[in-house]
Image 1 (cartoon, rainbow, N blue to C red):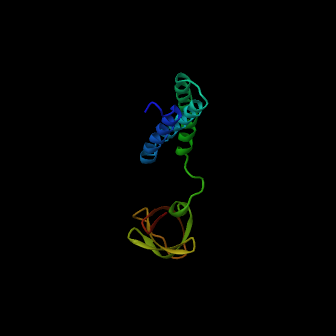
Image 2: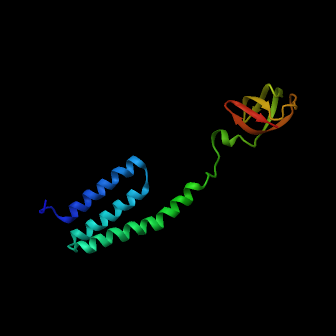
Image 3: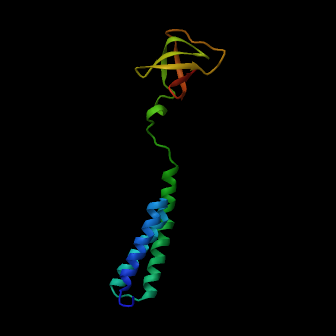
Length: 143
């Protein structure tokens, strides 16, 4: 094992850090792997072990300090473009069959949907416009 160059060991370490990155989806392991690659480059250029370890630590910590807060900020943001059922919430619909607490039908976004009134004491008659406040399964909840 003494005849294997240090840069090979650093690359093995980078690959080993890539395994938990893929399994756990924790980006920190990827940042440590990049630090190991930086140390492998310096080892290949002939720098001593102290410089290699310092490069590994500095690159890894710098990536964690810079990239992690940026990634956290973007992961907390909701997508600006609502799609699917979320895009239907807040839309207006036209009542096709009387809608009350037990059910009815509406035309929403060009399609016929089952609907029920949010307020159990309220009923909406044919032709009336209603607002969709939620979607539960295939049923629109309207007011």
